[in-house]
Picture 1 (tube, rainbow, N blue to C red):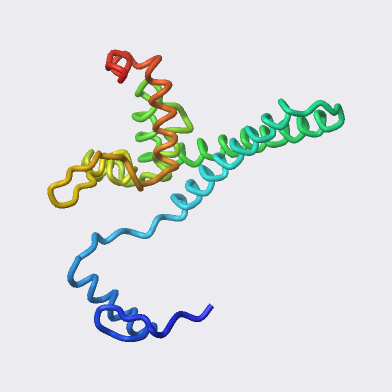
Picture 2 (picture 1 turned 90 degrees about the horizontal axis):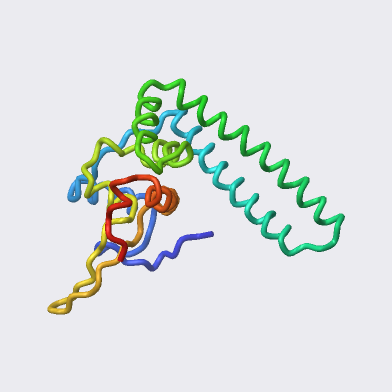
Length: 196
């Protein structure tokens, strides 16, 4: 799809690769974004495995929901067969995730540390390692903003809006939410917090 040529950006008419390159270079010079390293091959594989695990869990949930709504015996049998196949794939992916984490000393140490928190299981720990590699390198406020659990203000002039969480990494936020629900029952520190 061709790009529009009538765009006016930073006082320059048009849009070409040369203009884009200059604008990006100016952005880098003015803003000075933090330099990030390219993820390792193992980091990319772990990320793909964790994503695949999430997809399989969603497919199993969908099939089980269909099973609850189906009366016709051959369809029920077909759905059960599909759930069994998906469960087998899920077990294999989970084992591959654990094997990959166990082969890396740093990941294994982080995994064990994360799992020492009541409410954090294998899936949560693996997701944090795969999809939040900045954990341990940034402070808690930066991590909260990155995940999207830090309340953001909505102020304009003298008006003060409500604070809401927004943006961030939805997949990480979801596993943290589930871990928090479990921790509410098993972690004495979280259990003691008031529920509003």
